[in-house]
Image (cartoon, rainbow, N blue to C red; front, side, top):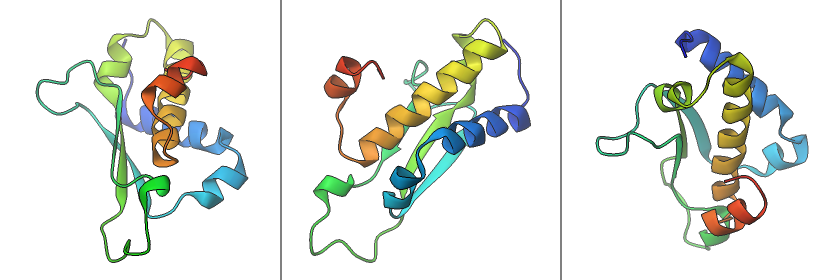
Length: 115
């Protein structure tokens, strides 16, 4: 599957637009980035959350760089057959990584159907 980076970034933005405003308002000190490829050795990784989940932040959480959510374009495109598949996979990946920001682990996400 081929798709320009610009179009892919638009899909990430559209996926974010679908996240309820109440949840987006609770997100704190986090940035969402689109990268073409995941880190070396992680070629199947679709997204990644790096940082301190909201549930892990204590009284001493201050002066830290923003958490980062990465959405990886090429691995998502590799597993999709058409635009509709990409739209669906981007939405699932965005929700999955945002959930990590809220402290929800992979096991719970899989149980909820967001794996």
